[in-house]
Amino acid sequence: MAKEHSFDVVCKLDKQEITNAVQQTMQETKQRYDFKNAPVDCVFDQQQMTLTITADSEFRLKSLADILETRLAKRGIPLAALTREGIEVSSSGASRQVYQMQTGIPLEKARELVKLVKNLKWKVQAAIQGDQVRISGKVLDELQLIQQKIREADLKIHVQFVNYR
Image (cartoon, rainbow, N blue to C red):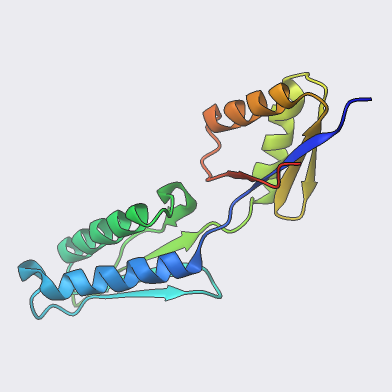
């Protein structure tokens, strides 16, 4: 009898790496001439999983966002896991932008994943388990092809594959 194989589709971000990227971003702004004496800030809220960046002008805010995204990418945080909200500009010209960090797979995207797997009509099962999706089947090659199909699908979220069994 063939053994059942499975893997989980998840999205987990390393909070320590995000914190390190924020610290590197702030360090770089202290050293750059275009940020000299400019009030800029970058704050990571680990409970809410948000990054908030602020600057005294929209131009500096965009430069700060570019530095932050570069640092996050270098530390292995996928930019697909970030959702940028709109830039808020106050009457004094100060700007602020919030990034929402994806944690887990949202329910509607999990349903989309299950539908994608079922539409392939292979002998595999997909089940939503909290904020992750477990995919199981008897043929290992099919599971690997499913991973490839999930990567190719335009889900607009970051996914990782873990818990191979």
